Length: 81
Image (cartoon, helix red, strand yellow):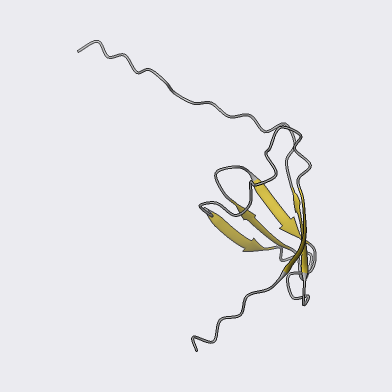
């Protein structure tokens, strides 16, 4: 045993209408605890940001945290050299 525990996810509430339902915890880029709100945890991945208000609960409820998120994808690069 490694001593690690998996916390069951009770629900995932995507509030971003264009996200497919399967967007969840893909390539996590950052994870943090909110120092002003005990129990609140946030993580970001290549889709956006998710949060829960009680990461220490036996089951967690995660919600997206997006407001005006835009994405720019470069498809062509040109060089003068």
